[in-house]
Image (cartoon, rainbow, N blue to C red; front, side, top):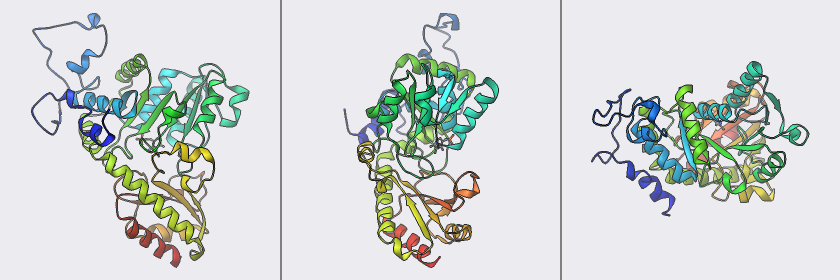
Length: 373
Ligand SMILES: *Cc1c(COP(=O)(O)O)cnc(C)c1O
């Protein structure tokens, strides 16, 4: 096994179909049948043959195949790509068909999907504290860690043990700390999801999601469902995401180191910022499991609370190197007054997504605005 940096550049070499060094963008929606070898659908033994001989791009297309080959090696399982992170979560939940879902604070869209299932099909939703009381065989425990918007960690091993003791499965949303920062397989996850829109894409210019499973047959079923859910990743996005992954190892390490330095600085100088209430980040947690779980480095998102909403507005609009926008994971640093998109969260909370700028410059920008609030 080669190092991650090498794998990200060569993990899909076997799927080079042409002599182009950069993979071509296939804009086509449909592909000609091979008139010398016409196998009707009824005789297909597996959908894998679509990888070699694409038919229609909702089912699969060349750069999607390359992407899944690369992600499968990189993420240690069988990867299935989607049009966005939520497409992946929906694919998982349609496949697993749980009667009960257990989750706490997590991405609002994930909660939205469970809300739809509850409304339409009576799926029950409980908090993580209720696993022992209500969980049964085939139920789903969903945990996002580090968790949005705080960037703090929950103990995956503990949740895996609790879920498994009831016959339930554990899904981990690892978007905030993808490998090599955190490898959720090591702690008992049954399925892992990522919004690839964030760190994997890394340039704030595409949407996509990836689900990783340990069982090839399950991956096959997810792909089959994906044909009918219409949630395959698009052609152009697969090309862009492949291109992004070539530099992912460089980006994520830099972003993780930057964030750890920034949080450390702000925490050590917090007495100089009268408006600052509290800082949230995994690097500030003292529990033993946190360092073990984030063995490759802390996630690049953290949050802080200020004393007033006015200070939040001023802070977000005065920074020079942080654009005021939602989302995270890109090479450019972002800041967001979370009240702009979430009415249930602390209305004085600001989320910070650290990019690839110099940590010193980011610290100077944050520190000078914070000290003037
Ligand atoms: C963004 C995000 C999602 C949803 O991903 P999309 O690509 O926007 O559909 C899910 N979980 C987490 C933790 C996210 O940050």
